[in-house]
Amino acid sequence: METGHSYTQLDFELLKLEIQELETLTNQLRNSLNNSNSIIDQLYAKITNMSRTVSELESFDTQNVLAFRKEIALLRKQLADCEKNQAPPTHAPIEYGE
Image 1: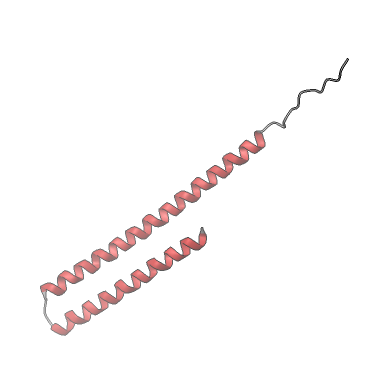
Image 2 (image 1 turned 90 degrees about the horizontal axis):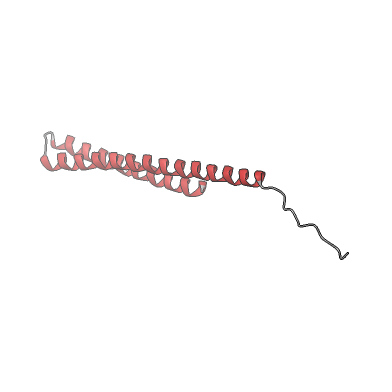
């Protein structure tokens, strides 16, 4: 499970890096025009929204992983309790012919 979580974390890091690159390009374009451009402003707003969404998804994913780990830990404890509390099997006494 840890491997899957690491893979997902790498995906989020890659998305964040790509979003940062888009922000940089948008800022460079905005600076080169020396004025406000509605299309560039709209693009920047979309990039900002994507950044927020990625952060929320990452947080949600992390919370899900933690919730599953807690659930697994609880189930393991319940299984251990069942094993501990299980009485040794009793066999009916063997009766030999009288």
